[in-house]
Length: 291
Image 1: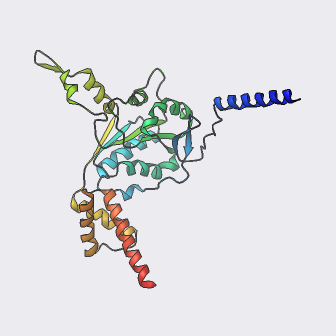
Image 2 (image 1 turned 45 degrees about the vertical axis):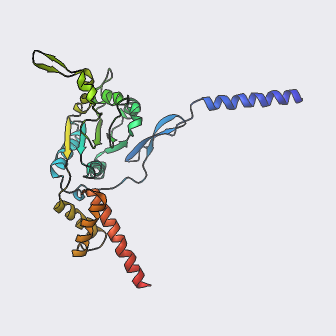
Image 3 (image 1 turned 45 degrees about the horizontal axis):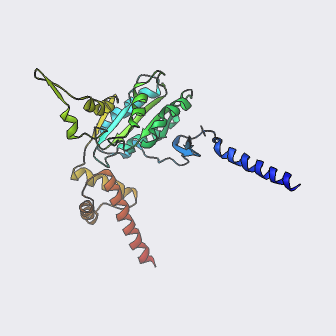
């Protein structure tokens, strides 16, 4: 009897080990959601629904009207089944690049637009994501935020395949919208230029340089964003402070200027952070007076 019990225990142990080796069951995709993140679960990737997407209105993004017009037009073409381009938004920090993409979801979710956020290190899974959504009726934007690659980073190749297509055709219900603080998504080094060749006065860049610049060129629409000047920064401060229930008076004006000195930049993000800080100070002072 003891021998039988021992055999049963060993069998159960082996079964448990086998279960750990087998792929875990992945939860089905919640297609009722409007946005997802690509996450890892038990060494497998899946689309995790975002329960509370960040709701931003297009009208609340200021001083990027030209860029807004182009990305809205491109997205409308996409939603109506017309030809449209993948989009690369580059430029100064905090000028509304990511917010603009999130605002598209707010504006067009009712028309079938959906958003999938993919981190840079998960770009190798893009072909898998494309296959998951290929036959869905919705229109998907693959959102890659703050997209840059290290010199030895190979994950950019997966993005190139999706942007250009491979043997399998690209999915008609998917576009890539990416943001970056620099236009060249991969770093360039002086050593890259050493391999440049000169033939009868003609300059032929090395394959290394061609490889590094080719990725950005695969985005059909480039939108550039620039740092705000002081008047634009103060206007955004006033708007956000009003949103929090306070007037942008002379004291707030002075405080907003001082706030930029601590940040070393003027941007929509800094203006929003100022408004939250200043409104919080005012709320705390009012609370103290009531006590």
